[in-house]
Image 1 (tube, protein in one colour):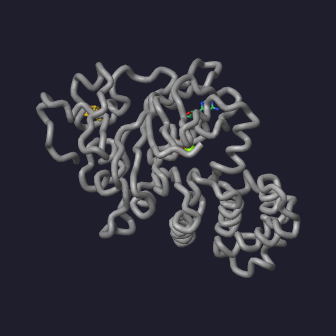
Image 2: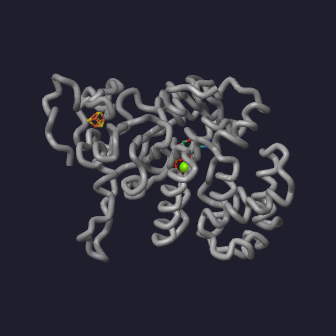
Image 3: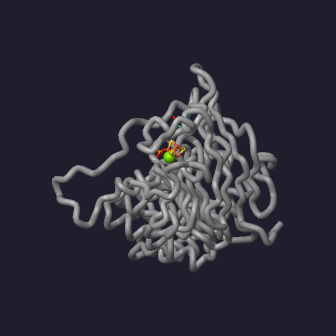
Length: 336
Ligand SMILES: Nc1ncnc2c1ncn2[C@@H]1O[C@H](COP(=O)(O)OP(=O)(O)OP(=O)(O)O)[C@@H](O)[C@H]1O
Ligand code: SF4
Ligand SMILES: [Mg+2]
């Protein structure tokens, strides 16, 4: 039932994959809230646990994956305790997901209109086929597909990547979800189309009044689209804050590294982009201390020995890093 708290609250989520080599701890003690009507970004390099977080929330993990701890409260109810039928109902109404590659969720053998209409029919009670089809056309118009009356008859392969992504978004919003989870929805697209899709998502948030959880490895996408950001690394949440706090009051060396990897306005065409040296930690055997220690220019002895606590810097800004310990000698020095 509706409650007055955040729309979704992830509490101490732990997710592992059980493989021949052992337990891969992909998400470790992640807590996050998505407010009503907000766009929250989750950002981090490849393998940081962004998709696994989304798949844990929606209970769409592959067979060898399991949530081993925590809670996912959606409108106050724990999704992790729902049976399969109740969960399917939620995924056909309350929460919708958009993936990077539309071809993984669109059926290549069905017209796009049929696919959207079927979703409407499966969800809506007492909706006729004609109504569902008319609504499919309207949805295509809403996601700004030109000539929707004509395109509704097209097959996915007859459309460009950007248009297919719009179809996916139309299908995702056809059930009026309160939460839209978009996992790298623009990564495969060129920059112009990427910007159009992001603008579309922002517009939709206002039109259909839903919250959006936007997963991306691109801090630039976050800056343009989100109000708040969670930065993940090695399955853990490194920093969380308002977009302004993350960009202008950066409180974690990993976030500083991501920021430095963004192309600069004055960047020369042949100048290589900065990238953080080294590679992410093994999640089969995660380090006892800070997961970023091996790559961090500011690492101290304590960083290898103990997991840093989470420091609350403002009511909206927190960071997991020993540099915020009151006795840390380098406390307050600007991050490179
Ligand atoms: N089926 C699986 N079996 C074992 N390990 C897995 C499986 N799926 C994901 N992982 C591991 O979980 C970790 C987190 O993966 P995840 O897909 O969440 O990363 P991501 O942040 O979404 O990265 P990307 O930007 O590449 O999409 C990775 O180390 C990955 O290897
Ligand atoms: S805890 Fe230590 S290693 Fe980790 S980010 Fe902070 S300074 Fe770097
Ligand atoms: Mg991913």
